[in-house]
Image 1 (tube, rainbow over the protein chains, first blue to last red):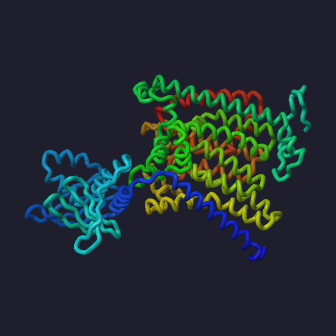
Image 2: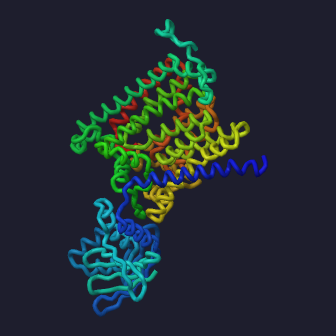
Image 3: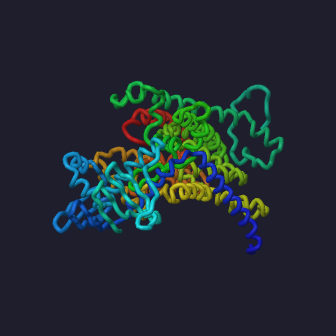
Amino acid sequence: MTMGRLALPVAIGAVLAAAVAGAAFLALQLLPRPAQTVVFGGRIAQAVSDVSIVRGVERVGRSRVVTVCSRLSGQDYLLTIGNHRRFVIDGSTLAPLESRWHRGEALAVEVALSGCPSLLRALVERLVLPGFQRRARVPVQAMTENGAPVYRVALTNRLTLIVSRRTLLPLSGAAADSRRDEED
Amino acid sequence: MKKTDGPPLVPPTPVPAETVSLPDSAPTLLGRARSLSTAEARARAEILVFFAVSRLLVLGSAAFVDLTGFPKPSAGSAFAHRPFALLEVWDGQWYRTVATHGYLLLPGRQSDPAFFPLLPILLRLLHPLGLSYPTAGILVSNLAFGVGLLAFYELGRIWGPETIARRAAIYAAIFPMGFVFSMLYPEALAFAFIALAGLFAARRRWGRTAGFAALAVLARPEGLLVIVPICASAVRSWQTMPTASRGRALAAVLAPVAALIGYSGYLWWLLAEPFAWTKAQLAWGRSFHVTGIYGAVTELSSALRHNDGWLFRDAAFCLVYLLCLVAAWRAGVPRAWIAAGAGMVLLPLTSGSFTSDARFGLLALPVYTGLAWIGRNRTVDVLIRIASIVLLVAGVETLLLHWP
């Protein structure tokens, strides 16, 4: 068969197949859509989750502490605070941290703000899931910081996360008056 | 075959498929008379009787579990408030989530893009009629299964003798894992659309083939494998088709992929992640590797140690499916359908687990034809029917213990 004789059926087939794809896309519009901020929160969680290593400088009061959180495997991270304190962050559960949080916030906040991706992700998801299930918006705010377009995500009453508007990667985190910068 | 006004004096002799099934494009008086013949009407009635009885058994068993909580009495109170609540469990909750809230992907977490959109779309369409999502889902599943059985019977008559086609449809109706066809799961829809796509492909109705094949994929990803028999039909007919028909045939071949592109495009547009449906699968441990089948066998060998005896149910069904596919090949089912069926049974194993393979294999239509070929002996036939019905009820009664 010549190419010419094949071209017309291929063209007809491609057009009809494209129509099928378009019809499928349109049919999907019948499904509800979560709030834009919820979808956005999911994307931030994804971007945070993809990060393998976060280096940061924490400023708590007058002291400055260098932190490094690097992925060991999967959702296991090695967190190094200063030169002496090392923790293995296993998985993404916040429960052990939060149990300390009530007794004294310092360590928990320190760990959370060190920016371990699995913990940041868990904090973001904790906003996103209820927002998805209750059709509510997630507290994400567009703003500029040092002239750069960023989003500010209020993770808790005290904790905020700043992410790049372009890459959605975390730039910095802050707890009330204390503040810490992170870099990928 | 001649139409008669009264009932026949002797039972009609089953007529081989080749002489009964005429293409729709030949609407002769003879063809119409044949399609309305008493024998066919009886066959359809018999299939529908088995369909009705099997569904009553499934619904009745589900109601029994709802009322008693058997075999987990502690769960009884959770179900007592709504009839047939048992049929909404496990993945049914996810389809309900999609219908209620839409899609959202969360990394490393079980997310709903893994659940294909056709059933939730239908739930949304029926909701304004006053039907709750679970009620609508169970209704859709059961109706689709009835239609699917009749379509499968017609397809089976194209594959081989009418008696085997009829028995295959009956076996499908009472198949032990077939309680899934009454659940808030899209398997019944996929079963119906795969059968209809195959039927119209065999009849060279390419537009309808394309539509049903696309719907099959939007119901379940296994629907993608219907490409194989559609492609075989198109290739067989290619030389004798005019140009426009060739274009439509090509569209029918491409339609399942096009539907998947439509779904991926939607996820891209919504979540900026076109492959969210495969990413979401990762949280269930579903990622496909070449060595996956070896991993599945290895997992089976350690299943008892890990208290996961249910894997043996899935592995046993997998074995039954493969034996039935061999039987289907012996029965003369087209090889393209055998290949598609084998894909539906074996491809999930490449994820390294037998988990849910008993359910995935339900859509491998030649399995039922192979079983019908094995059951051509009267005694074997009776044994298969009795065993199927007992296991079907047992499957519903143990639904609380493990997901299908």
